[in-house]
Image 1: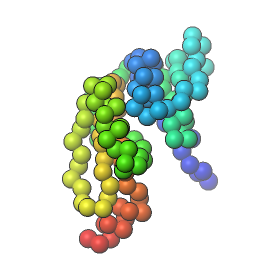
Image 2: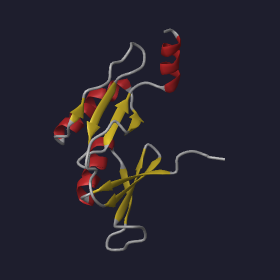
Image 3: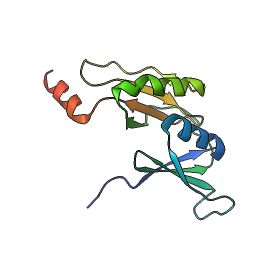
Length: 134
């Protein structure tokens, strides 16, 4: 039986750049750095972000941008704080998809390796309740 998501792994061209990204935007806590050791495929770092294990490994950046993304839940009152952090790093925003009232706000942006992230203020329960109203 699946118990939940174990971890998410992102391939990045520069571990230190990715470290700045995860720490600055998300307040992620760095919990491991392989240094010159390679237990996995390449050098790597682990972070905790909202209790979720995030792994970053050195490698080639994604060659193109898609809508495949990871969304993290944030509080509505923190929306502008996160937007400012993304702007400070000079990251590219992706315009949000059309929304209906009651499904929360989203901030979409790409990291330095073309991974798309979303910061979302809503919940699944809120979205399903709104969609059920038609």
